[in-house]
Image 1 (cartoon, rainbow, N blue to C red):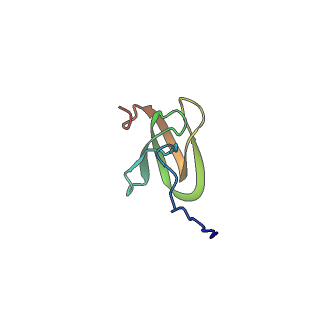
Image 2: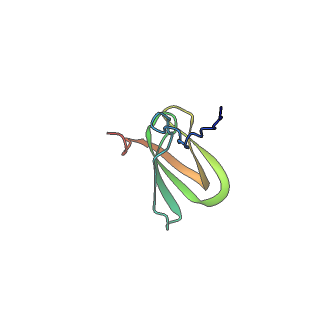
Image 3: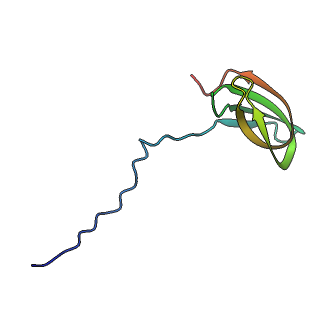
Length: 91
């Protein structure tokens, strides 16, 4: 009696069932000293508009005015303001 090893072909995991977390971000006025960033809060998906000053190697946590948790982490010198807006990505 002969024994054969049967190899199954590689089958990637089904990615349709996986939950994908991502964050919408749009950066405006990149060439200006004060940049405007439109994004959604990571936690509650509230639309936010932040004005930040400069680019830096330090990471700043931007709190969400709606839920109070960290909405996004930005590499900037200073966050000037954060204003809640309707999210442009929610329909």
